[in-house]
Image 1 (cartoon, helix red, strand yellow):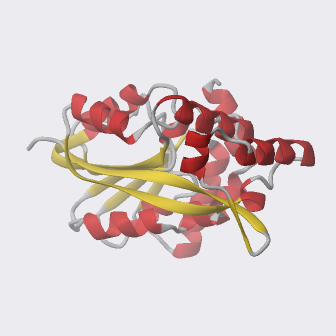
Image 2 (tube, rainbow, N blue to C red; image 1 turned 120 degrees about the vertical axis):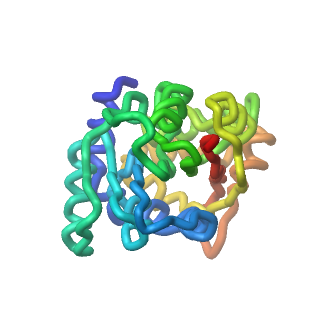
Image 3 (cartoon, rainbow, N blue to C red; image 1 turned 135 degrees about the vertical axis):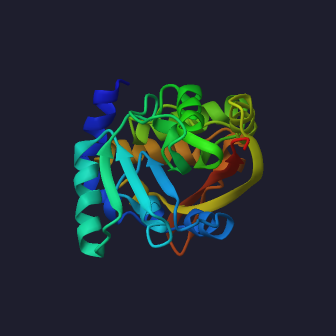
Length: 252
């Protein structure tokens, strides 16, 4: 899928992401707030900001936050929320995660949350994060992860039927290797399971696609099923996704 296809997919669903519980809240935001202690002179860059929820997390504690995305409609949602929240130190700008339009050693913190599975070139993205960070700067990455091997391939296929802009979720071990190979050293890593209501998750699609996704979920091979853990709770079909959370530092 090309970047223009990704822009079109997210542009068509920008309002959904502004209000989506998974993006607007969730345990990963609390994790970032717990483990990152920003200083008031910091410059922060949030990549693939969506509607800006991660960017807003640190706005009251730092000098400047730049919230970036490649989708104009997403940035319109970000700017709307900036106005509604009265945030005067948050800027919304267009930027490609794999080719950031910023000078080297400019930022103290770079964040990217629940987005890299849409990137075609994850190593380029990580390299760009390293380039724009100051010595000693922090890189915080949160994204859905999958098991290695065929189970991960199945989970990625399941996601791609629901969202054509999905490229690939990686296993946690792959993330750690790529981040360390870019020159970072990892200071903390965790995983968080998140409960997903199937009907809400699949709501943007017609009945035929929803039924195809339901079948994929309920008839998943054993290793994929043990990862997705579908079950019925109070008459509702639910399953689980897993987020990998990594905090890494550039050498001083």
